[in-house]
Length: 239
Ligand code: ADP
Ligand code: MG
Image: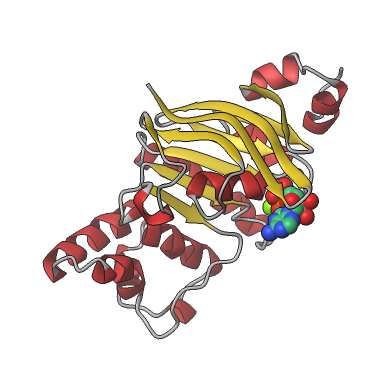
């Protein structure tokens, strides 16, 4: 069964139609990249999926359940933003366990989940440090860890690497690739305007333009048989 199903999704901001008739089926455990030029609606689509933005019409289902009216925290979705803020006065462990503390989980369980998550992200040795004692990449991993502790079914990334320098971006791409192996059952949707990132990371790519899906396919399919000149030029293949 498909983990995430989007049918005839539309999203307007007043008179402006930002997403028109989006239809997508994303399987459990898939790593899907949304790619397209700035302003094409990538962030809006992610925000609609997460529930941060109400949709104008259509349906979004997760695990066969329509979630149009379900609140963000109850959708089983975690979102990693472009800019992330860790709590500077808290340790890594406290940062990662904070949402569980708010959910009133017992201390021991919080500790166990935080340690498990830290091990997956190679952060075990940093649990007692404050964010300022970490590198940029480590901070990014703590931000991801904060979401993982809640066992999301779907992980959404909105251009998480765009604020990083080139070397760190390469490293983080590898780390996200690693994360995909660590969490093979977690569906991941990754937004970028960088086609190289899309081609190297995706199981499947969704190419968006002006709020519409231009093509969906594996990196190889898009490269070898682009459906339009736009896709060909965007992906950089010789159509
Ligand atoms: P992308 O992430 O692909 O760069 P966005 O989803 O941020 O694109 O934006 C798509 C379009 O929707 C843009 O024209 C943007 O100006 C518009 N938009 C986004 N958010 C809002 C909002 N809250 N109110 C009005 N227009 C918005
Ligand atoms: Mg965006």
